Length: 92
Length: 365
Image (cartoon, rainbow over all chains, first blue to last red; front, side, top):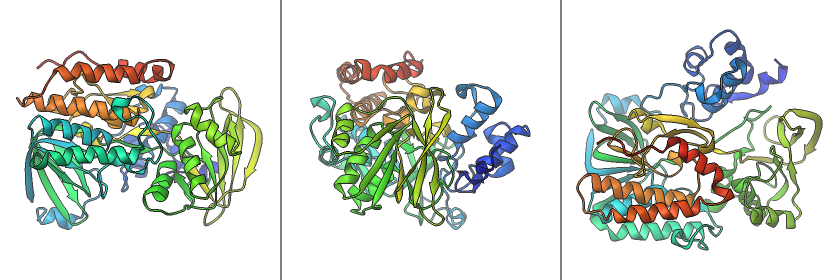
């Protein structure tokens, strides 16, 4: 891994670098969901819209699995942040 | 929680969504359009160039005028269609049959609909390179919004990454806004966009550097330049590098479909490179594997606005028909012949291959 990987931001919301993604894939955390749990990549305001594609390509390349057989992360509502006060008041 | 009820919820008020809503409302269905942006029209509203394609899809008309035509058609339907702007559909909960949405930042609503057309469009891709998070690195579409919608000049000298249609058109529009374009760098060995767009910027002296990609953005607090690297046949760097003087870097490296709501609804998806990401399986009526959900436009696979408008028409027509409204199903064949026309020839080869992977026979009713 080159030093410059440490300067390449993959998940902008949570500030996760390409270096970190590669390091954790090589440790065996080689699915989008596992990387999300370990690093919080894809758990920020954009919910992985920007980084999931890059992370899947990294997993595919490092594991030698074709991209169309690489699992995306689980998608759950809500798609963007909602204030808890709105949920607590039943959305009134 | 305030609740709204309608026959058909159309998610996204762009080219596909407006067409779907107009078609469904014409058949008599009640429609709510939920649009996350401040205004309807989607990407059409910033397209200042004239469209290609066919006359039926407004070839020769500038994109923002097409948005106006579709909105006027929708206005004629009056009470059948309700548009909600600044409204992001945040989730679909199958067990309750309920959609939730944020209206602005302070209002959270529920929407009950019997059918849904997902026309939520696409998002711009970003690529990894050193310093890609400093101010001055933009999506090309974002730059187009800044210039054509808000009248903001994004910088003085731009480097464009990607010579597809978006990269080429936005390069020209940057020059129209008084921004110098230092170069267009393209990783592939040939220009991806239409020749006429490429010729236009070449005539103005902008170099298009094929087999080149960005390696690094220079600058501490904002972009002060860029380093681009030459690539070999296998897209590996040859070692030859160039420094480009620029204060903005525009990424026109592709789009991916926005499909979260389709996932919430359990629609079967497939990764299709020709459609630029995960795309829903669908039949000829644009119905997905969830019988209450239809898809249209870039959310169903990246194509372009003319095809998105026809897919929207098909989805709106067929969703209305499925509820028993008087939709003229003879139009379905006409719409498909228009789609086939747009996708004909060498230029349509990629999209035809992509569609073949996701198109299914009619889902069992």
